Amino acid sequence: MQAKTLIQTVDLSREEWLEARRLGIGGSDVSAIAGLSKWKSLVGVYLDKLGQTPHEDLAGEAAYWGNVMKDIVAKEFTVRTGLKVRRRNAILKHPDYPFMLANVDRFIIGKREGLLCKTTSEYLKGEWDCEEIPTAYKLQCQHYMAVTGFTAWHIAVLVGGNKFVHKKIDRDEALITYLINIEKDFWENNVLKQIPPPFDGTEASVDLLKALYPESDYDTEIHLPSEVETLIDSLDQIKVDLTELQTKEKEYKNKIKAFMGVNEKAFTATRKVSWKSIDVTRFDSKRLKEEEPELFKKYSNTTSERRFLIK
Image (cartoon, rainbow, N blue to C red; front, side):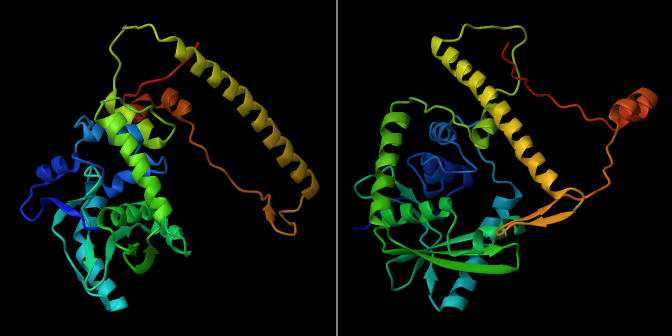
């Protein structure tokens, strides 16, 4: 199997590239479709494909420098592994499932293998300390193998600007079949039919709703469908469950504290527990507002947000 070329990217502008991405599902979309992304929601991918995303291009500094550093990461990969790489300046598509797209970083010369180049912050270094690869990148690489028919994919990551990590992912036919099925379902039953998937509980969905509906229209109202009543009942039950769990949490902590008494540290066969005295300084904004209103006003920052309440 060999991937087909959707479009050459050498002379493509940023806007043209974004438009081409909407013609199918790319590697960075896959984890959201699988419900495993920390950065994207499924409905966010859907709106992007329809050109309805509130912010067309959220590249930002991190994404910009990540793209700039691809060349350096690729060169270091060659230095460390001896494997030579080349660019493939095109968006590729699966020969049988043309909605599956791949904009790959590099191909390995002389092998049916590819390379994904990444940069990440020092705060995420723990994700790369073990043999396991973060799920989003694993799915991205398997998606690329599905499109190209390649047998393996390498991933090279510059962590915190001073640590280089590289790993190899072998083709997983079962996982690829799963990805083809969920991508096909999403593309045919959501995107093509323009039927939006439901919002989920990810932070990506929270952020997307804020971007879609940043402000309420003053004093407007609607009647909600009957299914919303079920959602509200479920929320009520969650509140009860959370209250019970929080009470249990306090009970278990109190029992452990009772065992410890005045001791600052304690040990079990597998755990270390500490209950130490610390000094805590809290800012009394209420008092400052009363006694120094002008100073309070000078250093206050007012933002707009929507408050969600159920009565």
